[in-house]
Image 1 (cartoon, rainbow, N blue to C red):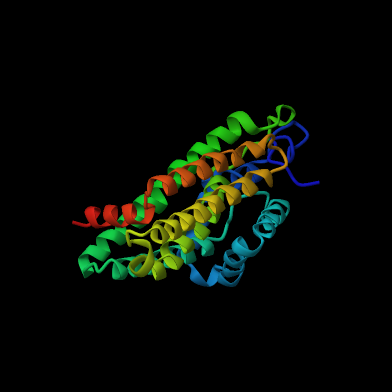
Image 2 (cartoon, rainbow, N blue to C red; image 1 turned 60 degrees about the horizontal axis):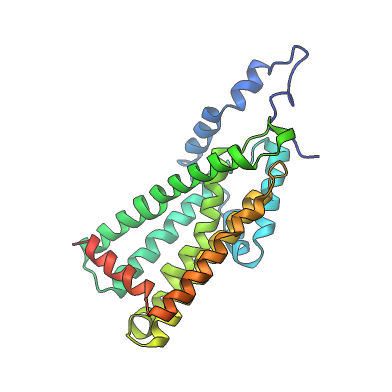
Length: 259
């Protein structure tokens, strides 16, 4: 069986954690260890982080099997190695510079766009979504008979990063090759290609998020995390019928933000 986060799982005879174990398992101690490794690149496993990025496209279930292994060996679900975050940040910077180039932005406009994408689109929205999912999963999805279990906030943020990476590659990399020549044209093909890429990207985000929470054995009814698919498909069909072009809207918004 998998180790648990129950307070009773590593208790002594008097029912309390030893001082050493209690200190080692506090959220503050885990956060300090994670941030400390952020400044020691030689301690990061970039090869494994690249493997995770590859398999988030090929077979995301295998990525979450590794989270199970980490729980068994290190007694935490969340990543303790910031290598994935570092590589994701590099991807974000490179793809945003590419976006600025495609939109014919100047140097300072591209820097403004980069700051917006990093601190608002990725970090800000990520913190908001992770906190919301952390609250909802602990409040409504934890099995009644296992109330000692809880979803770590760090794990909720990791799930967001896992789901955000395929979305980033699709919308900020693959889409770049079609923007000027296909997507932002006023033709049916333009908004069909653009909106279809949005459908795939957001659908991937929903699916990888669902896999992340369904991988936790103490959660129930995680299938409800797939319900947004219905709204997504409905919005996609409406956008095609009305001629909305989400990518064109995004490009206009980015240009407005960097003025």
